Image 1 (cartoon, one colour):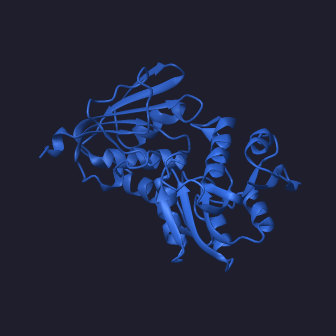
Image 2 (cartoon, rainbow, N blue to C red):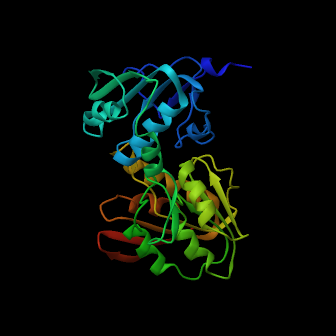
Image 3 (cartoon, helix red, strand yellow):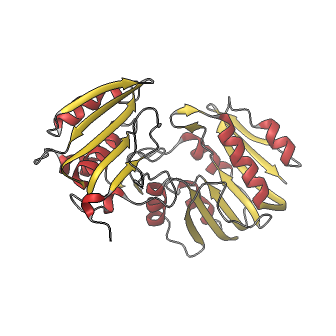
Length: 306
């Protein structure tokens, strides 16, 4: 068995020309289905860790704190972030934990190197701030870093108002915390629902938010769900359109194509999207009818029938 002092890890997907990752490093990103949990690493269990830091302050401090907790004293921590997405604050954040920091810049990223000090300050507070919690206002379990983690997304709220006549077997693609799924499962004619998300934290929260034997929560890329083609009666979704912080219109189009493949003939896709996103063309290619059911507040809702 490999000794703990020989284990190296990587969080996220740092560009190779920005930050080096040790050969054989264990992947800990919650956005990589099947990856290990950094939270499960024993204190001092890693000999080195490379992190592509997330842009959100609370989430970023949580990840760095978990990394420092998991590193052995003296082990190297390398943290990279785009300068305009937290990179400019990395040095001060690491110094606040008691680290002595070396700093470099490369390809619009700030890279900070620090050895884990014998004594780290502020770990417990940073971990508590970024940990899963029950949000009494939302009535949902959530965690910083998950999409719309501290509010109900207005697009999802609009879609819930228009969901009608659902029944049979379905899926919620990009289910997040399970807000849409709760509304779907309130319909008695729904027989089963698969909640799919590529964010482990969302999947874990949804598993706590949805207490229904008809529901199954799946940590997976939407292109690799294992859902049998042509097996579903309906799909609901508020698809993402950002990848790594940059807008990616093709991401939502991929969700639509995957939904079309899952649906039987006559099945229906209920979709909400920001008004500016160009989804009408791909919907027209894959579905017989694509009526718009709402267009308000910067969002549009479609009922697309295959």
